[in-house]
Amino acid sequence: MNRMLIAGVLACLAWVYGFPGSAAEPVAKSRFKAGDRAPDFSLRDREGNLLRLSDRAYPGKELPRRPKQVLLLDFFATDCKACREELPQIVELSKKRKDIQVLLVAIPEAEDGQRKLEDFLKDHPVPFPVLVDTYQTAARKYVATQDSITLPALFLIGKSGRIRAVWMGLEKDLMFQVEKILPSPVQPATTP
Image 1 (tube, rainbow, N blue to C red):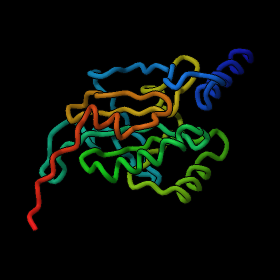
Image 2 (image 1 turned 180 degrees about the vertical axis):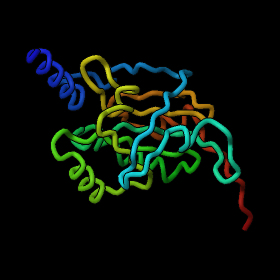
Image 3 (image 1 turned 90 degrees about the vertical axis):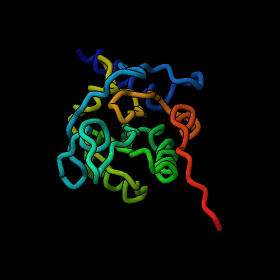
Image 4 (image 1 turned 90 degrees about the horizontal axis):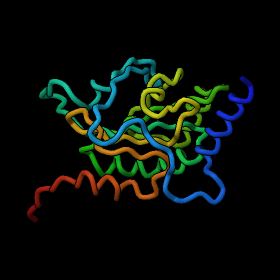
């Protein structure tokens, strides 16, 4: 039992921090691929409000006050070095691509995780909602294997509720990757 636990922890650390001499391409696999329906889940935000994924952006009845949007779902942990490195790209994408809603799913550390998350977000504020996955219920649906959780993990979910793309591990040029799949909407020309 202890050997399995230690092996799981070591495997998780290896994925989070990378293997020495590993290739640039992430080896981790997602249980989902492009075209799969994104599983729904409910989590609380930092203020304690219960939010359901499908109510935030995709699918369902399109309301005049809140049309459907594409969603970038980011699974994140403060103790994940690659997650911290990737976060500025996600913030930049959220500012440049108003047609894509970003939702951060934070997985708190085991010890004093909520405080560490709040401290991190105070120093690195984000312009999008943060859901707290204390019991890893959403993470288990999206990014867990039998032994570990792979982070960072990003899911681009279309207006239909289907996954358009999955990135497991650090994505060095996220904006470029998103643009390949979902080109920026054409802005109307302004006249002087």
